[in-house]
Structure formats: C-alpha cells, structure tokens
Image 1 (cartoon, helix red, strand yellow):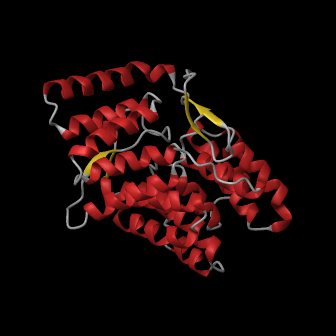
Image 2 (cartoon, helix red, strand yellow):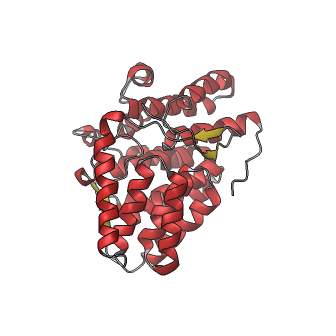
Length: 302
C-alpha cells in the first residue's frame, strides 16, 4: 500500500487523515485514467464530462481536496449540471464535510427532477470495483444514497430514511437496492420501535445474494435471520477487505441497540474504524458512532 504524507482532512474524532492507502497493483490503471482525462480536457476544455472524469480520477489517486477544487471550478460554469454536485458532494462526504455534502447531493437531486436516469460509472472508493467501466449506476441513485448516509452520520436518522427509501426505489440492480436498504434499515431501526425496520427486511429476497458484488446483502440476510451471526463474525474478522469494515459495523450496530452490550459495540466500532481506507462509508459511520459514544463535539472543517 502507498499513502501520501499530505493531510487531506480531520476525522469526526479530531484525528488528522492523510492520503488514502492505494493498492500499488492498481497504480498503472489509475495513472492511465487521469492521463486520459487530462488529455480529454486538453483537447476540449468545454467538455464537462472530461472535467468530471478528471475530478474523479484525481480523487481515485487519493487527492480528495484537489478533486473538490476541480469540481468547484466546473460548478462555476456548469451550475445546472446535477453530475457536478453529485460528484463534489460525494467527495465532501468522504472528507467529513457533512453539511456541504448534504447541500450538494440535495441540489443534485433537485436538478435531476424531470430528467431520465443519468448513467455513470460505479464509484471505486469502497474497493469493490477497480475498473470504473465494469459497472454502471445513476447520478440520481448515488445522490440519494450518499445524502442519506451523510444524514445518517450526522445522527439525523428521521431525515435519512425517506432519502434512502428513494434510493432503494430507483436502484438499477439488486446490489444497489440492497446497499440502499441496509442503510435504510439502520436509520429506521434507530428512530422507531422496529416494525418499520422489519418491513424493510421483509422485502429482502435471498436470491439477491446470487452473483452479488457488494457485501451489504449478507448483513441484510443476517438481520433477517437467514445468515448465522457466526458467519458474519467470521467475515468481519477474515473476510475480503471491502467487507470487513461493513460486517464489523453491522455487528457493532446490532450491539448498540442493547445497552448491556455497549462495551462490545465499541470494540467492533473500533475494528470497523481500524481499516486503512478511511474514505469508505462503513469506516465513516463507525467514526460517527464512536464520536457520539465518546461525546466528541463535531469538528468544523473548512
């Protein structure tokens, strides 16, 4: 793994976060993508798609603050393009600038009203896709999903769940639907008595696990009682890199609902928060929960 010594942001716990850990094996592909994006901007500086690719490929190199600058430059000219705000909103979320992220992602959703699905490459921050062209998503889905997660991390669960429900409703695939429904379940379970959360689980189909790329379906099936807790624990301890933090957070979440398990919950939150990739959503959610448990006041990030 390669990391940058340049600080990117401050965590919700007040720690300095430096450049993202990057898999050296994927380095040549990342360099090719940013080189191609720079060439495209050089050929036509009015091509907003080329600028968006440049911002995204810059973020893939772990230079998130620089990526925000690129998207802000694009937003000054293409202020009515929802893709710009969706992209910048995602990076602001990863940088812990939750209010800015929510504002951008909400604006992306509003600018998308009346438009058909805006197809884009699937994000790579979670570690599940190395080549962005492999999987597709939509700007609308990402805007609602990420806005919902940002609201969840702020502790505004009541505001998060309708946004996440919208994401689940417009998901293109079972993988996308399961991802949105897991965060929806998390939010609902924290604001209600469990009945609404159970209604979400009732919609989950075991068949979604077939050929699944994302690990979220495993947690949904576990909460539904179809996957043993021992299996989830094993995956949290020794699963793939992209699932360890998520399953650790799922275990911590389950224990946080039970006051007598608070100490165990913190142990699993620390495990979810100990992975190297601090830009992933489970890492961020664990960090937000740890900050609440410890009474840490939110750090204002400029």
